[in-house]
Every structure is written in C-alpha cells, then in structure tokens.
Image (cartoon, rainbow, N blue to C red; front, top):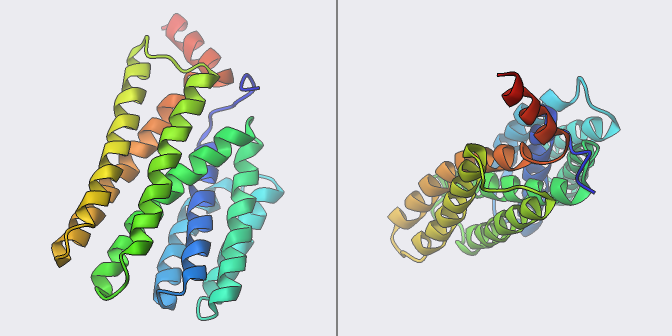
Length: 233
C-alpha cells in the first residue's frame, strides 16, 4: 500500500498547501475574521501551492484556481469557504497522486493545522478581541493529526534504526509537544498567552515540516533511493 510512495518537493508542497486551504475554509465558515485574513492566508497558500502546478495535474490546478477565487471573494465568507475548500481538496488530490491517500490526508491536516494555527494566531495580534476557541480547535486538530501521521508512517515502515529515523522521532515529538504548549498558553487570560501560542506554533511549523520529510524519506521508493545513495557514498 505504501511501496509506491514517491518523495518529492511537489508532494510536500501539495500536502502543505492543501491542508492550509482546507483550514482557511473552516475559518471562513466560522465568520470570525475580516477579509484581510483571507488575503494574507490565500497569498500564503498560493506561495506554497503554486510550485506544484508546473509538474502537477488537475488537482494542482484546482487548488490554484480555488485559492485565487477564495481570495478574490474574501468579503463573502460563504463563497470564500467553498472556494478554499475545493482548492484544498485539489491540492490534497495532487498529493495523493504521489502514492498514498492516507498519508496525503494525514500530512495535509498536520501541516495545514499547524500553519493555520500560526496564521490565525498572528491575526489575533491585529484583533485581540477574537475568540480563542478557534485557535484551540485548530491546535487540537493539528495535534491529533501529528500523532496520526506519525503512527501511519510507522505502519508504513518507518523505523528508528538510523540517524534519519531518530531525527523523525525527535521532530515529530517536538512538534506534538509544541502544540501541547500552544494549548496551555491559550489558557493564560492575558494577551501574552496568545503571543506565546503564536510563537510556539511558528516553531511547530518548522519541526512538523522536518518530521513530514524525514518520515516519508524512509518508506516506499524514497527509502530505496535513500538506501541506494548511501551505498553509493
């Protein structure tokens, strides 16, 4: 089931953009922020997802078009939610074309949840009156997805018997701990609580990206390519 997974920049970027776009669609559905957030978030999704289009298929194009429409209709939350949602599905479909649907979905939710947490956290610095429950929901989804993605990667054959394996474990554990830290930071009623949560989620974006790449480098065709390069070295 996992043997054909191909690790490329396109896979990582498609998962990342897809997860972010779906998260932005959910935030649009909540109707808690103004159009400025969707312009910033949409630009971030485009910055990541546009790189999947040159070598991608229909999913990448759907992701790109959906994100553009969502950004253009940022003042109409329902339209924006649908457009970003379709864009996210398109990018995730593109990610799934690299070998495995389950890993595409789990990776997208993990990366997207952490990144959207960070983006929305920054928006709280613009409007401190926004409700914190939105950040807590994104944090919970991201934390669960990180654990699920790690479990799926172990089922797929990831091991801890190498430097890459231990790096994967360390990065995955750090990412999860950072999201736990975000949860408890948000319990702090002072404004500094959101600032701390935003900073922690920013660090979690970096470690989650590392865990995503390291874990997938040990399975499927990626593992064969890695082993071959080590033998050649």
